[in-house]
Amino acid sequence: MVIMGDGLHNFSDGLAIGAAFTESLSSGLSTSVAVFCHELPHELGDFAVLLKAGMTVRQAILYNVLSAMMAYLGMVTGILIGHYAENICMWIFALTAGLFMYVALVDMVSRTPSLHHHRRGGCGKLLGQLLLMILLLLYYYIFCSLWLQ
Image (tube, rainbow, N blue to C red; front, top):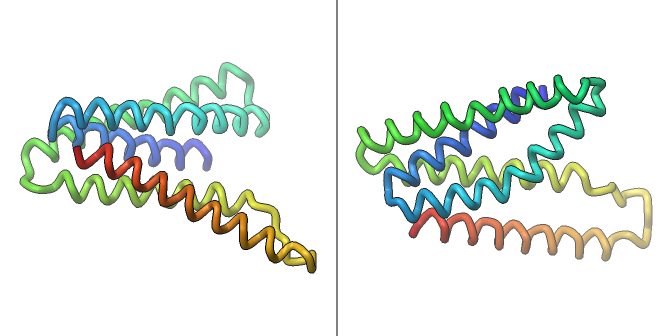
């Protein structure tokens, strides 16, 4: 399941990179750098999950590389769609930005410890959620500013 989800996520990354390169070279390069900075810790985390699931190092690397190949398929698809369809790049950017935010929220919110059982944890939980929202807005601002250049 991790590999399939990562493959779909990598496909959307490639889609964003391909569409960005059809807009301009600087937009494509900045999107590539942003996706690289986003994907490096993500792929390392997936590698650790695969090792923890019982795979050997060789198997984990193989499956991680295979799921990363979906980014190339997404990039080719993004270039073809962006080249032959008018005004579709903004829709691709909106889709991939939504997927990035969804993944960030699901990963971060699902990992936060539940404070429902503690009476004094309300302020800490509220502060944590506020900081998470600020980080999400910064994340959204950075990626949108990179894509809309």
